[in-house]
Image (cartoon, rainbow, N blue to C red; front, top):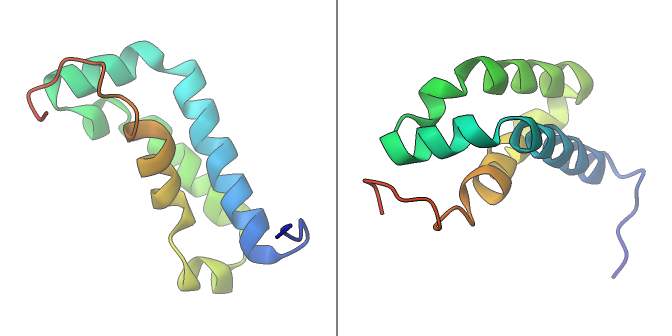
Length: 90
């Protein structure tokens, strides 16, 4: 089933994934360090805050109240699939 690119939920999901994807692309070393040292959210605090602010500025508050696409993107894109990095937490 095809998704409607004009659907506000699909747009919000896409925006969240793009923001987090860029964060991953430009911060690979910080991400590896944060996972190794179990400080991921500390070392990316600034980037995550900026990304979330951009997301909130560009996504309708009603859509944000109904969903948590930004945090889902963090789990799906930033954290999942990083099992190859040595870590205390796994």
